Length: 97
Image (cartoon, rainbow, N blue to C red; front, side, top):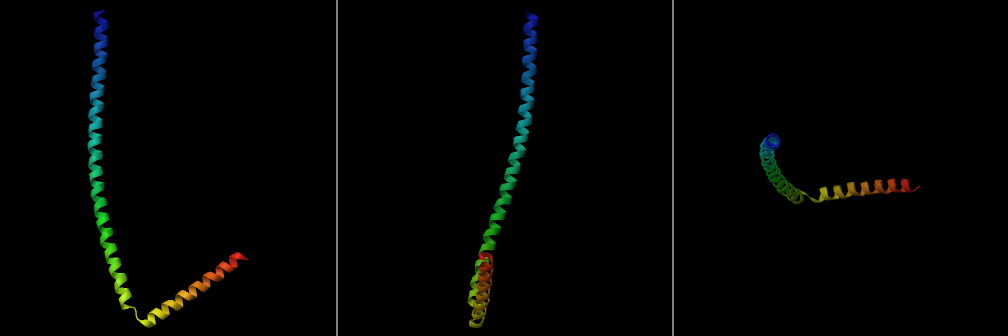
């Protein structure tokens, strides 16, 4: 009977050691994953800041372009746009045939 209890106790000890080992592995893996998350969050923050800076620069460029456009450029842009609209209309007409 004592041998049976010793076998059960030995099996239990083995299982506990396996659990402790597995817990250690998972704890290390969790630590690595948390470090990767922190790294990715920093990268994401940097990318977000870059996007904000570029968006501000783009808005400034649009404003500068609007200010610098004169009448001849406006007329030229309208002509080009009208030509594009005509081309699109032709394409649509061809597709409808």
